[in-house]
Length: 99
Image 1: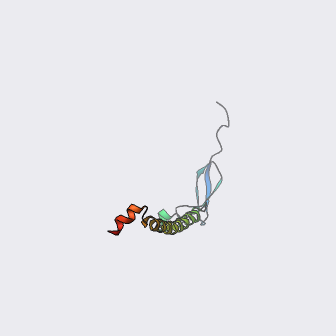
Image 2: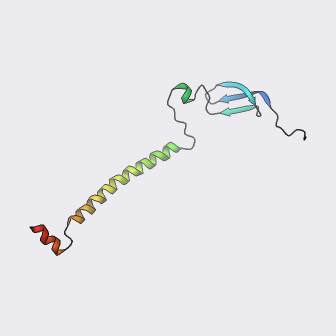
Image 3: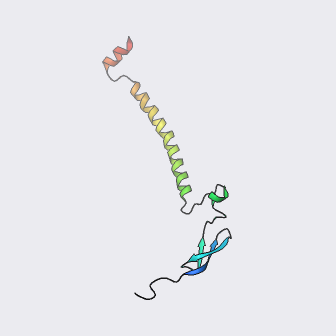
């Protein structure tokens, strides 16, 4: 077998959360920095908290805004199209509408 193929294992590796919580566990890294832990995770705290690392919320809000604007313009176009379709298309249609 080859010697020193496995990484060094730290029995008391420090885990540091953004909220300030610190705890120890076994890992191949001596210190680990995390964004969420059991003290600040919404599942454990019961609070609703948005963790937006890639600005996904802003992207969703812009898509929602453009969709609402599209609905308004689409409704106006449909009404204009409906009004133009109400006019008789031929002389026969006009005469049938007179009766």
